[in-house]
Amino acid sequence: MELYNFNPWWKDGKVPSDLLGRKRSLFNEIIRYLDKRQILLFTGFRRAGKTTLMYQIIDQLLKNAGSPYDILYFSFDEMKYDLEDLIKQYEIEVLREDSSKKNCFIFLDEIQKLKDWVPKVKLLYDLNPRMKIFLSGSAQITMWRGTRESLAGRFFDFIIKPLNFDEYLEFRSVEIDKNREKIFEKDIKRNMADFLKSGGFFEALGLDEPMLRKYLRESLLQRVIFIDIPQTFKLDLPDLLDKLISLAASRPGFYLDYKNLGSDLKVDQRTISSYISYLEYALILQKLYNYSPNLFTSEKKVKRLYLRNTAFTWAMNSKVDFSLMLEQFFVNSLEARFFLKTPQKEEIDIIHTRNKDVLPIEIKIKEKIGKGEVKILFKFLERNNLQKALLVTLDTETVFRKDKHIVEAIPYWKYWSIFKRVLG
Image (cartoon, rainbow, N blue to C red; front, top):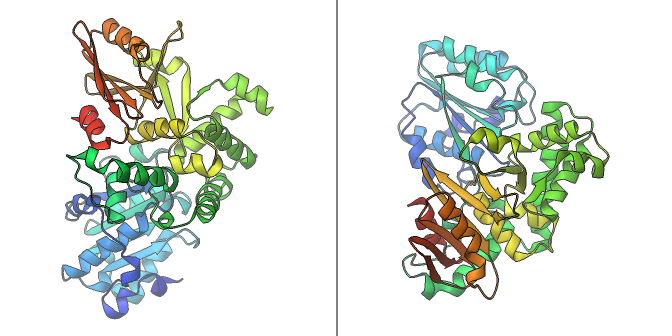
């Protein structure tokens, strides 16, 4: 078993600098949980930084004067070993005592590759009260299939995402005064266009377009399509996953009709539904529901489908319209759950809900914006007794008023102004 290669700090007490990367703001939040008994569970895209985060935590533990022998890291990504055997070898060869008798830290990367991992981790946790366990898994593949019930009260979970736009600018050493966006308009536009293509993946920064597209398709999407999901769900049609991703890239936000889609792809609609669910588990697809104050009604109504990262859309469809990329960017960034489509064909891109607050958001990336662009927003405000709506534009900045209702138009590149309006 390759324990020594995975744990170089056993020899010199240090994590190699090339494994540490650059810390993100989430690191400081997670460090607060180190002295808690519960398991820390990290899920997210491949290449989003989960393993790097684990190394950074190990580095922090070593700096806190911890013994390097009390820290075990192992990745199940390529290695097929049983957890019990792994811990037993660690106790015999490194710890030199029973792990239940002292404080130790166990990092298990790509845990979803371990067969029946949930009961095995649960047993390890219950039998070792002094052991702090860290888990990671690519996307959410298998992570939520019974996990919450079996490990209830035993874990805190964190979703590790690629860089957001703020972090992207920081990692590229681009300085922008967020309170003076107009001064930095050209810089913001240029960097946002690049960000939409790279998707915030660390390893994608600095790649030229051909290399970037190859990286996104082969290192990320194809790995999930042809290895991760089939290994987890035992699929018969991995090519169907590829077709669904291609379709979502060709028409971001397309209306999901399982029957028609099944007919077009010559596959049973129940299979289509299952495969879309697999891609949702893998955090590749994002499904939006038609808004209704009654959530049960929303579940039954028509749905829209987006890829979860603009880089995936661009990698599969380099000709995608910039306006659609921006629409997807705001859907992804705001973690949108709802849109609006009425029987009268009235449509709004995002109905953002936060606690009891509801904010309709329309994305109109075009040269001229007139009063006709806000009619549906005003109708929605009137019907739902709301005061404000948001219109994301190309360059138009103005305020439309009707009675007590307000629609504020803000250019897309005023990123921080938009998010301040939405998130408060």
